[in-house]
Length: 347
Ligand SMILES: [Zn+2]
Image (cartoon, rainbow, N blue to C red; front, side, top):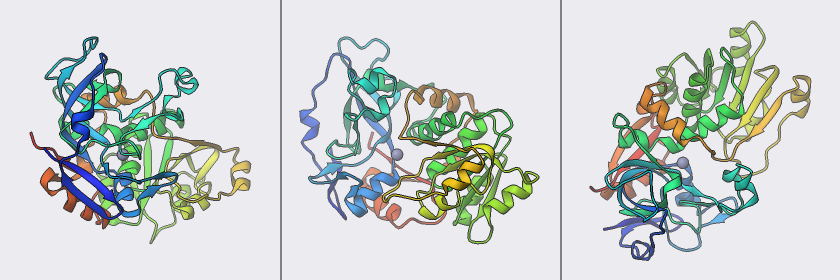
């Protein structure tokens, strides 16, 4: 049984990997057979650049952190899960005794161990041992493919939570990649009356426009601030979500924002970015930053099950595991119109 291993920058292989035989089961752990794994921008970035910020790939590492699977073994003290349960998993395991964790901010515990963030291995492999507390049972009407979208969806739901959306708010999401689109879906589910989404890629914007009351804006042809102010009688959007990571997007982030509005920075920044504090000041803008998510997986599963959020239109391609090196090459080429690619593990 093989794993997808990032040997070093630009070098992937499908091979047997010893971690399988090393993982010990704790009494509160479950062993999960992986079923579907999403390819994340961060996995692709480790492949193309070998590092993200301070996290550097220094020895071979298994990729992947967006996953669903089936419980195949349970520890002696596991109460809520049993063999055969279909589940999705939260990839970050904090130190339960750390100060941040005890304060409820376990996602920003400096000691958190997160799949496919060096030196921690990811889950493009046959099985994984994971704590019961970070493993969530799926209702029958949530597919493995949808469940593997819970991890990126959690980022959007966390961002919408930080934005403190009120029913009827207008939101603007910069970026129509997977994170931008799950954020738009979360903003609508949280009560936004309409959402504007900007991108450079018309194919992605077409997908966005089909997800609900979403107005696409192509930044190569339109000025987002002008469009949003025109559509809101000159008032602006109550919330702006930045999901591109582009310094250029950040530079103009307050222009479409209404007085007293909120900005949530989601996009990863490889370099320090600048924004116009004067433009923030005259609006008394509140700027929030998020790092991954905390406490939202059960909500995401519940929304997929009830139908209040549908992530299926975002899954644009599925590859067999044997094809996963090619899948990463395609993902690294950033093909137009592809939002989320997934890998189906051998069953
Ligand atoms: Zn991800």
